[in-house]
Length: 393
Image (cartoon, rainbow, N blue to C red; front, side, top):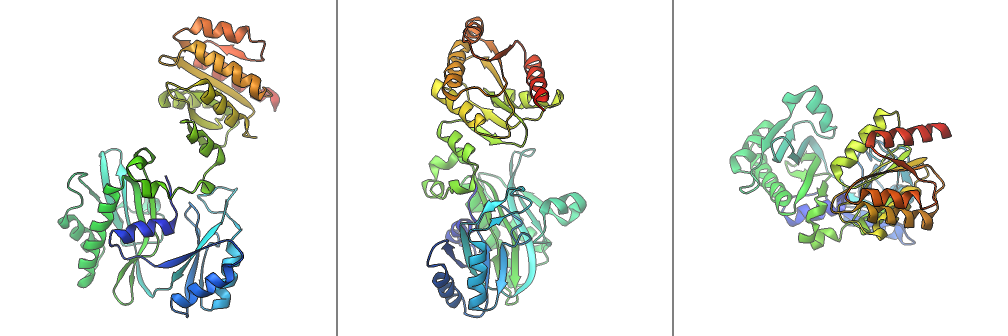
């Protein structure tokens, strides 16, 4: 689960991390007064106005403004709130700005990158630091890997003091900054482990002219599967920042991710879903989504899954690929038939069933009277739906 910058900073501040402080302002009739009050509160000479969306690259898209007057701060806030901010992470559709953060201005001497993420190969979190902040860490890792230090973190022991010191030395910090950095990195690692984070990134972490180390930005992604342990953080979810189809799917226990293709997919099992998407690509098509209905989906969940797929205007055809184990094929067939009758079929629909009670499931589909094309294998199903969609072009 992604959260906003201001929420990530709230979490880090709880763990003793020094952050760039600010005031959150939402769209409404009191915007001008709230921004004016925030400007005065944070010094009365300069502030940074930041759009709050779940995407990076805000500065390049016009979502971060440094201003030196109250009038300029109000103007920047009013221009940002309600705008559709487009960055390299939002996609061409952009994201509507509903909140901004009016932040204190800091005198910056250096920018640094600090982040912790799960390393799938090592099977543990890894601390990553670079003396070059404010840039894409992927670019540094690819073009100049020697500029990036990676240190594995033991999930049980946490980040060790000697690791934090090594990172501080790698960043060319000196004197009191080293002590600050060790405390900063230790607190960041503690937050990452205790809150079941997937990523905790500070880009940039800055050294001010006064020698203080401050988190100028903050990005935290939380493991959705662990949110039941963290009700305070779970309440930070902002559904406005998510694809409405993905939000609807989550309410029915469906694992749905929107993509940019034309063929909707409904599958049970993540591995089978990935194989289905790959096979569609082999036959020249492009998947419009990843959708795993799980092993025990109900007829209601199947109906919701089809409704979500049909609600995507990009979808030109649908492939249902179900292997009946726990979920029996005849139950799936009844769910598909009921959903198709409820929603109405206005695009090609191919259904491939295999497994427990498969013959009964296929019979139900044949005798349904609906415009459903059966398939006996994944390869055949992918070819049929790709051909059907191509014929519509």
